[in-house]
Length: 281
Image (cartoon, rainbow, N blue to C red; front, side):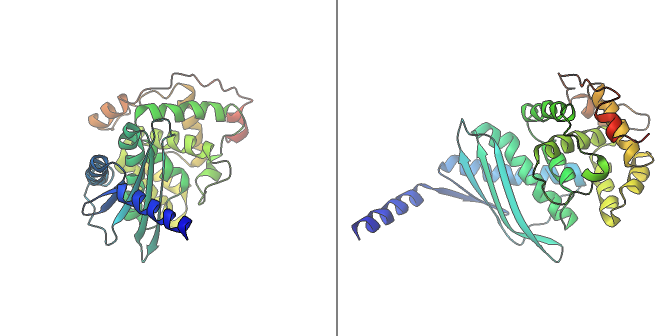
């Protein structure tokens, strides 16, 4: 009985140390009251700005508040997890966890996870895994994006590239998930650099409507099918992911693309490597 009493006292003390902060759409819990308030305010601001950037309009207030648990550790790897369910095309029952250093939580993990909630609200269903994770990674800090670029080079040169015909239809996370993250980010970055975020959203809407990604690729990007898109993307990666300045692309899109640094590591692919195995001849 004494042991149980001590345990209850310990749990009560631990809970009393936790602080919370609430906004219109988020309830943040953290052992630092100031950080809890900062995360809550930042989450609301990012929810607004991310929606405006990708969709062109703000989102309505959610019916269910989204709880965010914050775990801070300077030596802890940055990461997060967001779960939710759909009811009649509306996401709810949110649960979000963000962890890492204070800086990475605010500039990478939180915007990544908030992006998931924005896309879920807009589309009313789950996105293909490559598109969801890829697009959400584009809003992270440049240091995190560079990690994905270096991983991409490693995966493509070690027989872990994913053919587009397969990648575009992955609905659940595969066992070997890291190549999907790195390649999904690169493909999303390529398409966004090509014609902007709004076009990318329209592309996903078309492709998800009937799972005809060849048609969607031709309609929105002028390429014949996924095989042509894969060839164009591989060529872009081989050239170090340079900014794309195409006729007809708005000046502000070209300027935004120019701010995305190319990879510091060239991609040494040969014709008997990943390109020839997965590209159409």
